[in-house]
Each structure stands twice: as C-alpha cells, then as structure tokens.
Length: 69
Image 1 (cartoon, helix red, strand yellow):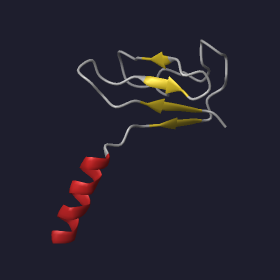
Image 2 (cartoon, rainbow, N blue to C red):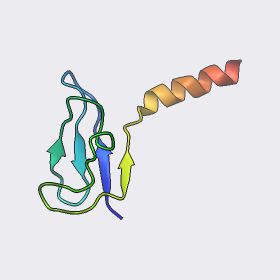
Image 3 (cartoon, rainbow, N blue to C red):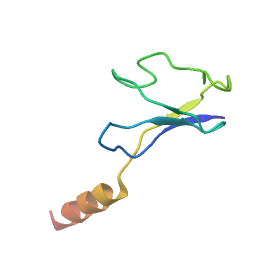
Image 4 (cartoon, helix red, strand yellow):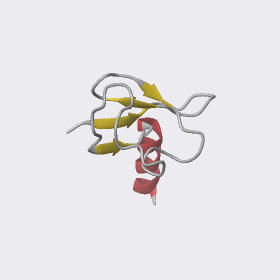
C-alpha cells in the first residue's frame, strides 16, 4: 500500500510526496485525486491512499477550545 502524502504548506502552497521514491509534486488546481493522479510519474507506483497534511498545533488548539466549551 503506497501513500501520496501532502507536505506542510509554505508560501507556495503544499506539495505531495510519493512514499515510494520521495519525489515531490505540486498541483495548481485542487489536489491529486481531483486531477486523477493515481500513479507516480517518477517511479510508476500506484497510489492506494492520499494523506492530507494536518497541523498538530491547530488540532491541539481546537481540542483545548472544545474542552472549554
């Protein structure tokens, strides 16, 4: 099972990294699934899962806010 993993966004946006070869890819419109990006153009592996970036700090802040409510 090979994943395409979204990296932490920077000033240019985010990139997606092939778990198999480490190659990075950027999309101008939407993400890999919307662009039918099912195989890595570099190594040819089929992607079985797409993992979006989650900011752990944002999750912790949200959890603390929910605890207060």
